[in-house]
Each structure stands twice: as C-alpha cells, then as structure tokens.
Length: 282
Image: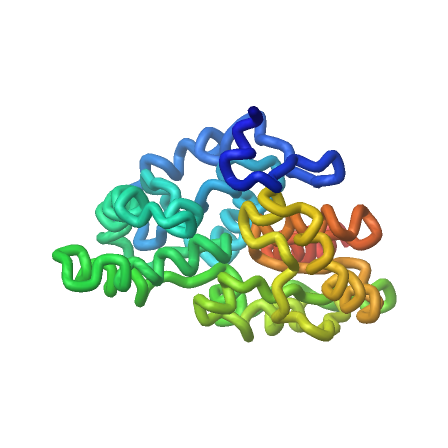
C-alpha cells in the first residue's frame, strides 16, 4: 500500500505530475555565512521555508540576491516548517511545536522576509494559533514584521535601466495564490511585475481563482484537481502570456503540471532577478 494512499483512497502520484527536482546542495548549505548571522549582525531574517530550501528551483537564491541589492544582508536563522501543511491536516498541536521554534529564532529581528505564500500566511496566523496563550504577544509582534519579498521590491523600487529592451518584452500574467491573498498580499506582486523592464504585464481573468493544487490535493484527487485547473488554463491562454508568475510552490507544481510546458511558470522573485541580469548583460 503506497504511503500516499494514507491521504485518501483516491490518492495517486500521476506520471503527469510535474514535481520539482530536489537540490543537490540545500539552500542553507549554499549560504553557510548567512546561517551564522545573528540579530547583532543584521536586523533582517529570511524565512525561506521548506520549498526554497529543498527544491532546485532557484527561488531562495533569487530572494537573497534581491535583498543584497537593496543592501539587506539577510540572516538564515534556524527554522522549522511554518506549519501550514501540518495545521491543514488538523494537527495544530504538532504545528505549534514548530511555530514555537520559529517564534524564538525570529523574535529579535526587525524584518522577516518570506517568499512562500503559505509560509507568509502561517507566520501571520501564529497569533490566532496561540490566542490566549503566553506566545500570543510574540506571535503578534512577528505578524507585524513579516513581509513578502514582493512587498520589499514594491516599496524600494526597481533600480535597473530599462533602455534598449523595450522591443523584446515578454508578456507575463499573474496567478494570485489563495494563501498569499489570505495573507493580505495582492497589490505588491502585480506592482512589481508592472515595474519590470522587458516585461509586459497583463492581468488574467480569474487571477484570484484557485488553480486546484491546494497543497497535497493534487495528490489526494488528481483527476478533480485537473478539472479545476481547466478554467485557470483557459484564462492563462486568453491572456496571451508567455510566462505565468506566482509565489506559491504548490501552485507552481499545479501550473507546471496543467500547462505542461505550453507556458513558462516562474516565481515573481525569479523574474526580478532575471530583469537585473538582462540589463547588466547589455
């Protein structure tokens, strides 16, 4: 009996599922100098979460590069899973164990940057998880200092020279993931995409509609998840976009699976990183 059948009797790992490759060197191994930084060295922490740490997708590298461009050398403090997958399955006591570790290690930083939609929401939701408990105060403090990487870029602007690349613009649309939207981050990603030189941003129809991945739902009921995706696929196709951007690792899996290479899927931070690389290469 495959282990994924414990999720549901309908669970299956479809051969069509486009899963990311695991990193040969984990994010923290690639940046050991940032793992030893303390609040005395920098006031900025990057909560990379599980996906950016374990996946070979370049998202964590893009975020670190962007922060460094703004003069923000981030720390990578010890961290546990934000708790979203665990809490979603009803294991809140277990999720809170990891949350306590995160609260302790993030307490002394002034700014906590995220790149994963689910991590962003979880860190902001700790206050509700610990309502009426001693950790509530520190959880409320944490919620106030959490910012998604797109919020940082939107606030500080893009410092790349747009000249010479207007004739070769790439059309990009945006999938607004449920968790990032629930975390209150809706305008910043669109603002960032609109600012990027070399990109023509178009907002698709039903941008806020779930893509059907919903964490492990794509494994629990693959057939239904793909039926849900049909409307999203149609909206992406209607937009004429060559690239669809988002900020959720689970959504990226669903988008890559459903689009099957017809449209490129990227994290917003990757597009920011690429914009800098294009202009510097000219």
